Length: 270
Image 1 (tube, rainbow, N blue to C red):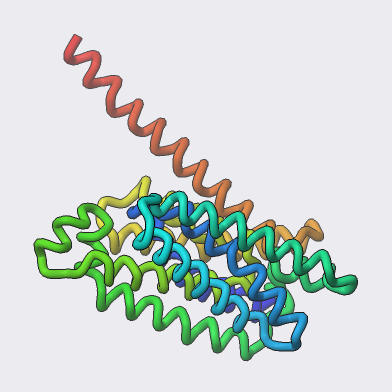
Image 2: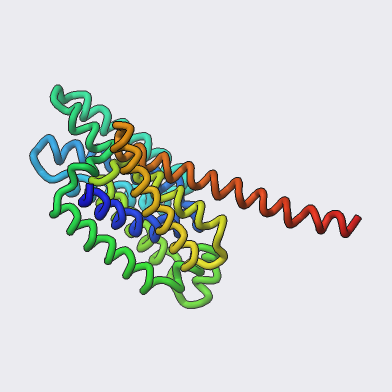
């Protein structure tokens, strides 16, 4: 449980940093596509005896390369390219899994993670990746901020919108690739979106939003592990469910506060 909590905290930090830009840039769809698109790479790696993280990296690289190629060489929008590769990669992954008779246990681990069985090696890999992701966000803070609100302004300021967009994509991909070992491909998407979404409701600055997202993620990890232990539930699912519940709690509180602020103004104006 202690190792699971340590790994969970690292995942929360990585997802908070990457998720902040996913939410600000409206990249939730590509985050979802990456989380599911790595499935065939993981499946093939496990079948041939390689670590799943290798296949996840190859699958993510194929997704990003395919999206870039289709967008540049055709008149199709990036959303269309993402949707095509998302459906194609997910279908390929399911097809590969369906051909193996002894894949059920591995499939559960891929989809929902194995946070309670996380190894020290995986924690070290998660730590290194989290440091790289945080360093990337710090180094590219200004172009990322401009890109999140106005890509044209980023170009005017002397930053290549295409270059930093690709850097942002690789940052999100790295988060998905490493975090799937802890919470699985299906649940890592929830950690990317829910804490950052709750942070966006409370913060007006990117740094504050990341701090809120990190805090919500860590709280979700702790409460999710407690709930899974006491109620005998799947740890990854419990953690992600807590993140979504926290988001809606913040959403409801913010709406109630907004109504309380608006009502007196309406009375005065009347």
